[in-house]
Image 1: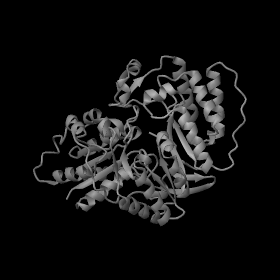
Image 2: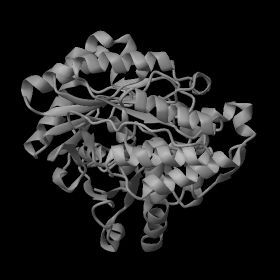
Image 3: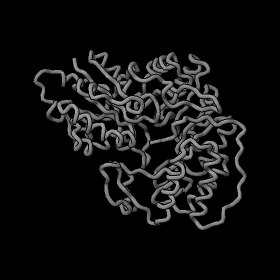
Image 4: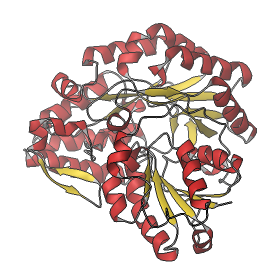
Length: 456
């Protein structure tokens, strides 16, 4: 029997699925598992010392940055522990993690491999505590497994009520989280999923998804976030899930993430989302510039998105658009044009203020580095921030980004109309232009949103 400590450092304000899922596999195999979400609980020296294996979940960029000092502390407190990193960003950051003392790197289809690693560590006279079980080359070359997913085991994690909630006007709804699929069949150039999944995705069986939802509803969930990178990668599977959710748990709402391209192609399915309790759809618009969209290989045009806005408005389905506002191709005029379009389409209440400050991230392995004009803007790879650092050709654009980051970063959940007005003013001042008068958008209904607005 091996004692395993699973650690999550950040997961968008939600109870970490990436701890609950492997915990189920490891406990079924007979191991003792402790789960610590450092956003809610400090990891104790006692739990570190007791662990034979410490595995850190790295689903995204922010989580990986926050994990680096945690890994340093683990190795200081328990230098004999076998430290493993797993998840999407474990692969993308493999070289830096190995420098920090991480011995095993596992990808985002990690559950079975974690069980295998734990069993190897538990064998007598096993040398895995001193030598890596894999190398960066073998990890990159390893095939993506097809797993028979198990229902996550959330015991030992903080209750759902301690995590981000859904805000609908003055009402707060407790939020659960699950996944109907992993990976993505698309290859958007800037997406961190692409270097790992490379156009592949894996569906989770309907029974497993529904059992996980039922357990969370019993634990108090009134709303479910589906974390699939794109819920319509498998549209029939997706619709089967939400129809089962509506049938088995009437009154429980949900949100999903779907590409603009899929919202356009499967517009006949949008009324079924609305009818089954979809509170909002997050969609990665990224830009209203056709040239930028082409470089990002997003698969949609600005006209496609405007059509989606009309389709969703016609049936009362709320959109939550996201943007990469600052890229190497952003101009001051282009930024103002983005604001004008958001205002013209009536989307101010639907856009989280942080979206006005999002800057293109270029992690290790990013397809952005395929572009010569991007490589020309990159100065170096920063091993603390875990990104290729780039500077815009126009210093005014970088200055505008810093100003927007300071403006919205201090008040992430400020009223959206108020924050848009301030962004609007500052963007025109940056261009030395008079500030056009605009009428505030008075929403007739509260736009539902999760009160953890970060996105990466």
